[in-house]
Length: 99
Image (tube, rainbow, N blue to C red; front, side, top):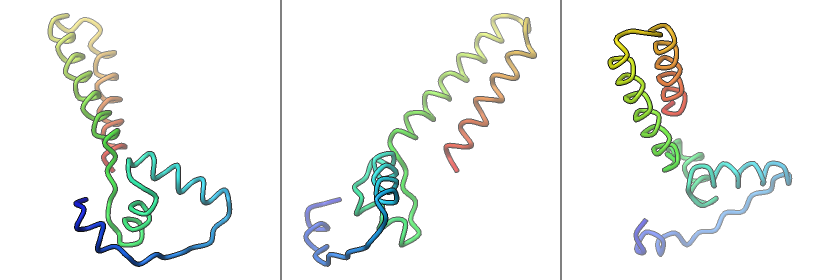
């Protein structure tokens, strides 16, 4: 966010919640890599928050999938069932994070 955008945001909204709710909101904001204010704005306005951590995890899973595929190719199909199961698990993990 540019400094001009932050200067435009001058209205302060207050909300009441239980301590457990406040902690969950803070935790989700941290997981998303944004401030609590930005997290609540996104939630209220129907915007998606995309964590940089999610992107890093997806990239790592894709890298691991590529390595797994390379090992399968180099192994000439030995343990192909196990390789296929691992690749499927990696694909499912990526889909869970992306959605």
